[in-house]
Picture (cartoon, rainbow, N blue to C red):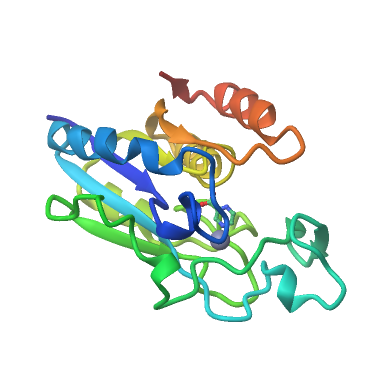
Length: 198
Ligand code: VGL
Ligand code: ZN
């Protein structure tokens, strides 16, 4: 048992029937549960937006979901309202096992900045604190699974590799959104950053 399993955003809103459903998102829950015993730490990331978050299309008059807007920190895809703090959609999938979990890391709580990555908000500068947690626990090898492969898993994996972690993404335990070629870009970006895809 070595290293940490980082489970990204296994929440109702990213599963079929949810506000930002990822196709087959619920198919990976059992496999993720089964992997938890293989790691010395298990961390869950949880997308956790205040109502009216700036990444929601509904917060931008005239905008549609999947439009791209310019934010002070760069281009931002506008999403349907999702993972609103305290909502059923923000809860973890009901079959996800949480007893073995060491840390639940909530992200996307700043109304003005989205946060795909579990390490930094989308300005790529504001830390979530996860790096400090992992470093002080002596974790250097990270395995990532969850949703969505081309957004939050991708950004988390690339940031972790840049921070010096050994990172592998188990793609069979991930599912993606694939908006405008985002899947191919994510896979090549992760490889270029030194992430191992298995
Ligand atoms: C995610 C879009 C918006 C994700 C979160 O978990 O990949 N994608 N918020
Ligand atoms: Zn979000």
